[in-house]
Image (tube, rainbow, N blue to C red):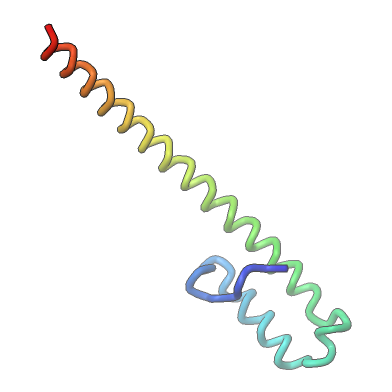
Length: 85
């Protein structure tokens, strides 16, 4: 099962999605007997690649955010120590 085939959510896979949808339109019965299977396999691979790229970008973004939070916490704790002294 694949995610919804909305083009704006999967910009990397637009061409394959369009081919896959066209195959389903061109072969309304054949799609049940493997007519579009090769395109489905390509689509699944594309979705996997797209997800891996997004996952890596999100991980990098989270590392930056964690560093900012650590700096803010350190700054806040230093201010608290300064005020208490």
